[in-house]
Image (tube, rainbow, N blue to C red; front, top):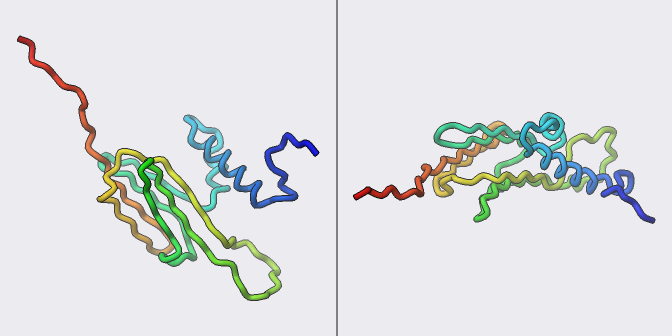
Length: 147
C-alpha cells in the first residue's frame, strides 16, 4: 500500500504523535509563528524561556518527577537537552482512566553564547530552573590607527 501521509495515527499513535510534535516545534521556531500556543500544548512538558541582559532562564514544568529521573545536558553543538523518565507501572491493574504518561520525555533547545561552566540547574516543587549566563559579546574587529 502506498500512503503519502508521513504516519498513520490509528496504527501507530505514539510515533505519529512524536512526528507531529517535531513538526509543530519546527513551526514554533519560525518567526511570527501562528502555532506557538498549539505546539506548547502538545509538547511533552511546558517550558518558559526568559532572555535577560546577562542570562537565559529556562523554567520547565516536570511535576511528579524526582530529580534523579531528570537529566540536563549541553553538548558541543550548543544543544540543551532536558530528558525525564517516568518508569512504567509494573503492577497488573485495570485502569478506568489513565491520563498520566510514562516513559521518556525530552525537549531540545539550540542555545549558543552561554558560559557552560557557570550554568546552574535546580528543581523544586515540580519546576526545573536552568540559569545560563551569557558570554560577553566580543568585538572581533581590529581598529587600526591611521598614520
